[in-house]
Amino acid sequence: MKLLTIPTESHPGELLAVTQILGDAGINIDSIDAEEEEDGQGLLVLSVNRYDEALRLLRAAGYRPITEDALVIRVANEPGALAKVAARFADAGVNIRSLHIARHQNASSLVSLVTSDNEAAARLVADLIVMQK
Image (tube, rainbow, N blue to C red; front, side, top):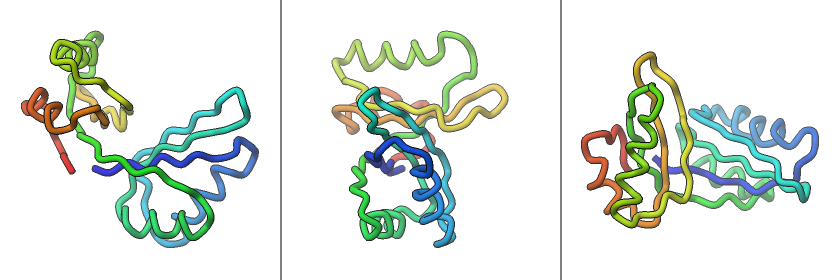
């Protein structure tokens, strides 16, 4: 899965603008996280069903999305499950650069993550991988 990280200004209507650009083109947002920094800047992190088209449209609208390859893993939806996964990376010296819980599905959760070494990360969580790109 590829993630789009979009630095934005933090003001009313910014989320509307990005989601409308994608919605008007018929692009479905599979997951999205929005964060606001204290300095008035924001970040939107999302995955979409038509990545290349979304990237092109957002750039044409003046946004500067940052693209990252992500692993999608399935973990148990229970306390401590994410810590067990994080321990695998820590023990191997692989840094987790970003992590997003994309969806809860009853007994499990889908988690997307970007690491300092996605090839090594894929080996560390080969038993949990749902999607890799």
